[in-house]
Amino acid sequence: DAKTTQPTSMDCAEGRAANLPCNHSTISGNEYVYWYRQIHSQGPQYIIHGLKNNETNEMASLIITEDRKSSTLILPHATLRDTAVYYCIAGHSGGGADGLTFGKGTHLIIQP
Amino acid sequence: DTAVSQTPKYLVTQMGNDKSIKCEQNLGHDTMYWYKQDSKKFLKIMFSYNNKELIINETVPNRFSPKSPDKAHLNLHINSLELGDSAVYFCASSHPSGFNEQFFGPGTRLTVL
Image 1 (cartoon, rainbow over the protein chains, first blue to last red):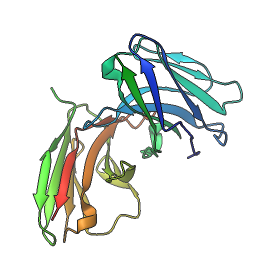
Image 2 (image 1 turned 135 degrees about the horizontal axis):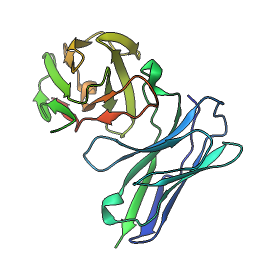
Image 3 (image 1 turned 120 degrees about the horizontal axis):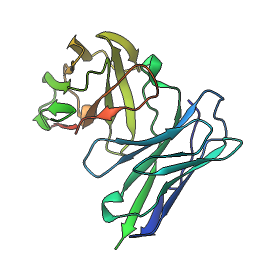
Image 4 (image 1 turned 30 degrees about the horizontal axis):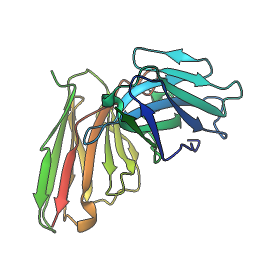
């Protein structure tokens, strides 16, 4: 799996959009970009994934650059419950029962 | 209606003991995983099973033996526990087709004294 690079930590004010960047310059053509988050003392939680196109679901939006070397996860209206470690992962689809390769992630702190 | 459950949530034991952690998923998934999160919070894949068959074994000591009695269960047995085994162990499951959305359990915090 391609390596990803994320800032160690970020702050965001409650109610504002949180934009979390991720670099994955060595991503291969068939690797997806996945985002998971881990709230303190809980198991990781899937947020969103994408291959080339921008994606949106009820939790977040994912913007992938045209060259696919970086992406941004957007939480449109951050709440205190969004405080967590966010992991950007480059990996294949799940058909091969692949494990996820977690990096250090970004510790997002939502300030009241 | 918990999707992925693990028991116990906490496990404190002495070095040299043998212990098991149980995992069950009610999502109808065919694939299950064990991950280890160490004290530095790094989360690493240990094993994956698909339809009760071992797919991934990531250089885990053979003191760790996963067992899948059926598709809904993947248990982790650990022999001769060592101090370095202290960690949080997460079970996860996913559907094998399509993308890699994995559902994680709440974790089991193992402390070896």
